[in-house]
Length: 97
Image 1: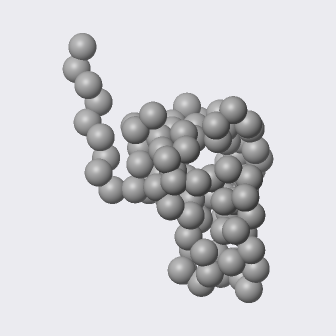
Image 2: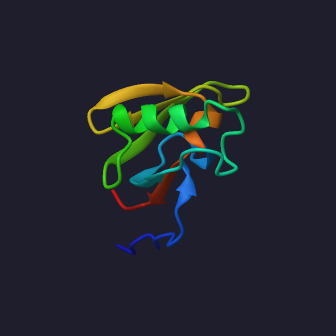
């Protein structure tokens, strides 16, 4: 069986679709251009506190249509609902589960 090629570049969790997953590489904080409100640092901090830490497995398990917002994401053994703008702060190495 052929192995899927790995995407070497991390991508924002918000770009993944149902069934996709990988390993958390980083959580962006502050005004890194990802979250544009003044609560940006708190969003990054909250994501880390609930388990979005480097090396943790993550998978998109559901999306609401139309629009795909919010999305249900499994991190470790817990499922969270995230807005796409929050999920843009989580960088994922796709296929590294």
